[in-house]
Image (cartoon, rainbow over all chains, first blue to last red; front, side, top):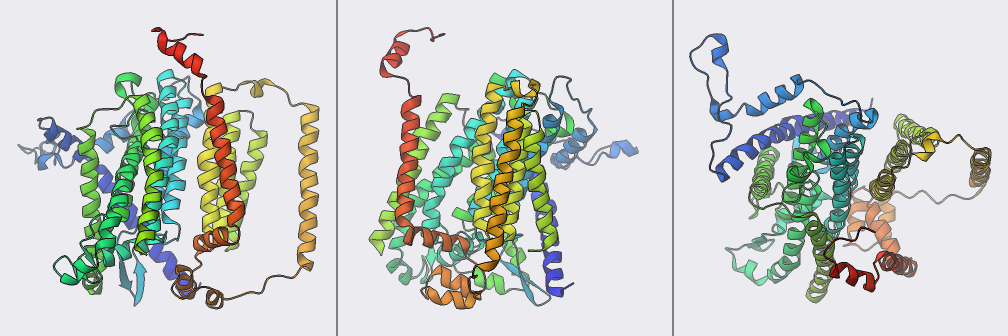
Length: 385
Length: 199
């Protein structure tokens, strides 16, 4: 085989394995832990702080608790070992396929997210993104729109009125918020003139993050030249700030997180679409939800907070370092984790919306806001040129 | 496009298409159609038409089929499962594909005779565009900016048809909202009564 193609296949395989299994899955596991610890901090409790290395099993006097850091492992093991209960009244095929259809799309989105700038392997630059395609945000929307199927089928196949209501709710909710999600992104695309996420991040590294334009090619806030050339950036902050609010809120709705978790709304629908699910099938829904949350955070970070870039013109210096690309990965993951904690914080702070309020917010407020925002951006761009 | 990948996606598309016809359960048929669309999107992407492929998933698999399935589930269509296949439907189902197949064969035969567009390398094609445009930069760096090219074509050469279609869609949307709205009189009646309308 052609050595270049072989190199491409090998690096891509390594990237897929590392990005999915070394970065994303542990973050998912520990965001479930963080969810419980942060919620316990917010509610003034202790939270799961016991699971560590169980030395008592091997005859020692005391366990090593590690402040509960092994809790996710124990949870995963529990999900695997539990009895897998399939009720008699369900539609078997759809009941089995639904959890996979929920988890798979969330993981697929990882492939276009730029985790870092690039590293040099055997004298060849390797971009730290699995698929560097020119249609990044569209690809995310396309795949995210497929994740409706999993939840809808779960609700329908369970043959249970609570599950069915949850499925119908999620279907309507996700379709409604996809519109404002898509429209809120258009100002970003207008400003950057790009759909390639790597290029969007690169231009943010050079010209200031979308929501933090503290530097541009003339220097950072500490230089006088910056202040003479920054009007455009700060004016564009108005529409971009609006699209950030609309986009983030829509991501909350798309991932069925509080305050928009109507599809599983425990107080009304028992468990919503996953009422009939148990063991690993339930864990897959859980995994899918957290994976969607992490991909959502990663997309927000990539589009609004500079992705892997550190800013202030330091990125070229980092890239020229031997393994600077890896440092960029660390910066990116730090931002993503910060956003995941923001997601958790919101969940335990804001109470759940009523269903009609949710629909009204989506169709009457955000849809119009995102639409008007496009015209504001166009007006500002026209004014400045 | 490597032929192996093409055959995988083509098989996915055909199997999906056949399952749409042969499945008795409407929801299974709808899901098979999604499978077929995904196969088609895979073929588009294999032909370097990322935008078309992604739109295929976004619009057809992600939006239209979701609504189909939503309706099928809400109505809980079960009649199809019990009905035997009717003669007329079967005949039509055989005849129409045959007609389409003949048409397709006709197109394929003439295709060999018609002149093909000159094969341009990306660097040469870049000369048609402005030096500072994204399209020029992408083409001269060896990648195909299909979204930018489609956008440029749509908003320059086909601008008027595009606007007409946009207005048409807007009319359809407004009409849909107008038709599904309750009349004002009925709205007022609902507001006046404390008990929700059971009728």
